Length: 126
Image (cartoon, rainbow, N blue to C red; front, side, top):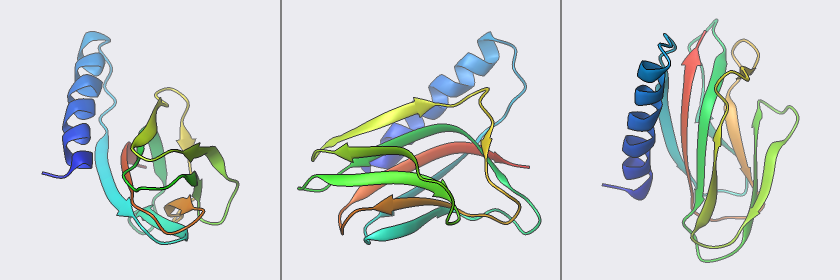
């Protein structure tokens, strides 16, 4: 099992438990990818006619060199820009923020150079 798959399992369990404790009816679906190319890498493209709402992010530099990453919908504004050292990353809980793209707009992670960056997102297609 890949490292992002293990992290997904752990974070999904925590997210589900928080929703249960807080009596929230807010299901999220996991989307994961390993980005390797310089520039935009698609994490998730919504079903035609829908848009993505992001609830949780887990980004991890599995490579051997520093890499700068950011996320964005389509070619829009860069969000959550970070320079990650090897074997480091960040997590972000966006529950309640309703960070969402436009209709038919893919969620992308942009890498400053070729590398190995694992991404797990919990979100909704709406």
